[in-house]
Image (cartoon, rainbow, N blue to C red; front, top):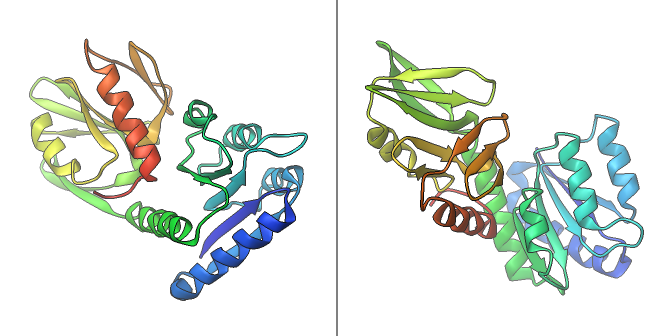
Length: 244
């Protein structure tokens, strides 16, 4: 099942987006698409707070009275919901704010069928890709690791540490270049200097000196690394993620 939520206070726009998503869903019947609509952002957040409602994708209007889409997205992240967010907006002026809530993409209103279908296709591909695993050799045995669980890889002399989302790590007897060659097939994995590979999906924030990961780890950025990593993150964010 793939659950999509739409939150927009304008009934006309909500109806249009709903029709488009339902039309797209007809070609993805095998994925069991479930669609929910909300005109009130508080109703949506209330459902999430109850703990039983977890959308995989939220199509979220930015300009709503009382509570903006950016505020809704921040509260959603505070509730530790990791679902994808696509903003529906008449302006891209909130791009930097969206960076802070890990939004997947913007769609400018009026929403066009071709653009929305393209985004939904990428979101679905991204969902399927996250279920993939990569096989490493670790201390004499085979070790299968889910791509979504890899937070970063750290060079430590002749061995490397693959740090995972649950706080554990896997020690690999490979060079960091060999590991990156395996992971670079997926767009979210980026090399940072000589010592790190980071998963863009797990970056909470970036500054000129460090990347703050969602596990609480701060990775020092060597000289000249910040701007390329920032551009890579924004490119990934604008493309909605996914395999290259």
